[in-house]
Structure formats: structure tokens, C-alpha cells
Length: 470
Image 1 (cartoon, rainbow, N blue to C red):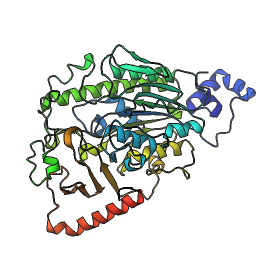
Image 2 (tube, rainbow, N blue to C red):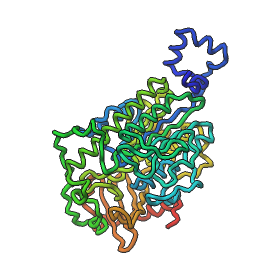
Image 3 (cartoon, rainbow, N blue to C red):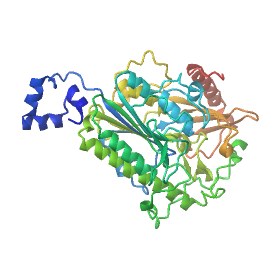
Image 4 (cartoon, rainbow, N blue to C red):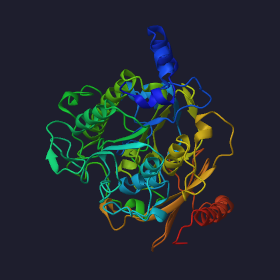
């Protein structure tokens, strides 16, 4: 059988009916390969999709009425969509390290792009492997160690940002080889080929895309997509920056100031075209999961490594603590534990993904030093005492786009931002009454009490999270 792991650990209802109708069940029972004991579910396989620079509403299931993402929607319809998923730092390399380790940047110490994630920082795939899982990585690791020192059973990755067309990619311990075609297609093909292997253990497959990172180069078949569509600009596109800190006014990320971001329509359409390619290839992987009979026993996760401005405040890129930059998609499908069509409004974070996967795999978390916490209770629809605020941090300055170092706290109603290097500057937004974050209330005397409360709470969070800079 292709999937020995599922036979050994217990048949899904679909397979039970299949083998019982053919007489194979009796043979398997007599051989001792299958046990009738269904008191405990098998440990799930994991397929974890991660995109680059995809904001939370970059899919149709989140309300986007331009971009069509039927395969992302398949995951949401078959599982749960988290509408308030955030990253703790809006930068690719550090955020990916947060996903991998379950720790904040100040603790895994990868604070900028182009840094090395210390081997002392255990990643969740390594911990899964110690627990008997087979592990595989396909795609963009981004940090300078490339993930090749993490003992994956299968590895297919590239350096840095990679190339959209004819990328150079290394397989396992081999050299970089040029693969003809579009990188999103190539990564999905390798992911499907991995799934088609025989697996004697539960597996964890990471499929981490380059797309939709700029400069945007969609596959040729998508180049005419949205050609005749006029995409409306966001309501805060013409932000005059009144009341904003100089740190925001002086940031170098305005639409029209870069050759590859010439104007709003061109930029957003190419961004959406790249996402259309991701969605199509997510569908190919999902089709393989279902064709191979793995659906019931596989937990599928889909997330973005950080958000992205598509015209808000006349910006592109990320880095700042505004919603478009820090809010990302999170979809989870696992038929054994997650009710189809669920929606959660709780605030979950990139640092929560690692402990959740380990928890679902039955790995003891009590001795794992992680800043995040498992959202398994939310997956299962259980009442739980969940977070009401979180800490944000950003450290890459000096650096691209001149986004100054900042940290802040977001609650369900308020957002307080501190640009903490001299000259220090501050922002405060009432998210209930000003969801587009247009009115900085930091100097409003009526907000003096809430400002003090937020400052105090931010210090408390930094202490709880062992921030060495405190």
C-alpha cells in the first residue's frame, strides 16, 4: 500500500468501507496489520503551505471580490479560517523563524533578513522528527542556513528570494540546478511527488512559496488575468500623513517611486496574478492528498509570512505595525478534529503555529521553551481563556525602505506604536472607530489614561516574553 502509515495506525471511514467491501479487511485483520482498536486517532500528517507577503484578505474566502482563490477556499470550507491571525514581526526571514521556532525575534535572535538561525533554536520539524515523523521541506527558507542543516528527510530549496522563472534549486545534498519553468509550478510538482512516495511514518511537508513576493512575475498563463478589471483604490490611498511620525513620513515605500511598482493598477494586478498561481498549485497538492486517500489523516495549514500594503497610505511592502502589514491568512483543515466551515475571531500569532503542530502530533510541550501557545482548543471549538493583546516588534533599520525600528501592542480595540530609537515617536489608533488607522490620537488628552495603560501592559508583555532589551 502507498500509505502504510494509515494502515498501521487505523483506517479512515472511507478506507474501512473500501476494504470491507472487497474482502481485504479480513485479510488485513488476520495478518495483524490492522487493529480494530479505534480508541485513539492516528497522529496526523501535516501539509503546511506558507506564502510570502500575502495579506489576510488576499483570498476570496476572506471577502476579496476581485481575486478568486477556489483552492484556498477549499481549505477554509473544509476547516477553519482565523480572521485575526497576526505576525509578531512583519519581515520575511524573522517571521519565518517565528513560525519555525514558536519564538519571538528577540528570543530566536534572527531580527533581520539575511541572518543565520542558530542551531540552538530547535525548529518544529526537528522536534517532529525526534518524535518519529518523516520531514520534508519544499521552497523558500530565506534565512542564510537555508534549512539544509535541519536534517530533513527530503529537501528542495533555494537561496534567498530565488527566481520566478528558471530558478536555481538544490535537492537534498545536491548542487543548485536550473529548473525550467515557473517556480510556483515547480515547487508544487515536487510537493506532489513527495506525497506520492511510500510513507512508513506520519509526515510533515512544508510547501513554502516564493510568491507573491516582489518583483512580481506571474506565470505566462496568468499575464492577461484582470486585464479588463479596474481595481478600486483603498479609501486611505491618498493619505497626507498629517499627524503621523516622521518615521512614517520618511519611509521609502511609496507606489510610483520604484521601477517595478510603477502605478497602482499594474502593481496590484501582478500581485493578484502571482496569488492566482499559488492558488492553482495549492489545488494540485490538495488533489494529490485526496487522490492518495490521505485527506482524513492530514492536517493542512495555510498561512502568510507577513502582510503587505496594496495602496493603503500610498504604500507597498510591510514593516510598519499597521493592519495591512501584520495581518495574514490562516486556514486549517483536519477532518478528524476541525469542524468544516468554522470561523474564529481570536487573535492568533505566527509563534502559535509551532506549538499547535507539536500538540496535534502528541509531542509533550511542557519542556519546550516557546513564546507561542497551542491553539488546538480553538480548532476544536472549545471554550478557552485566550489572549486579548499581543506584542509586535520590528528591528531591520537601517535597511530597505527605511522602516525604523518599532514595537507596539495591539488589543481588540487599541494599537499603540513606539518608534524606540531617537528621536522617539509614537502612534495610537482606536481600531473600533478608526479601522483604517488615519487618526493618530497620541496627543489627545482624552487618551492619556489608555496610553499609560498600554505602555504598562507592553512592559508586562516584554517581561513575560523575556525580551533581553527591556
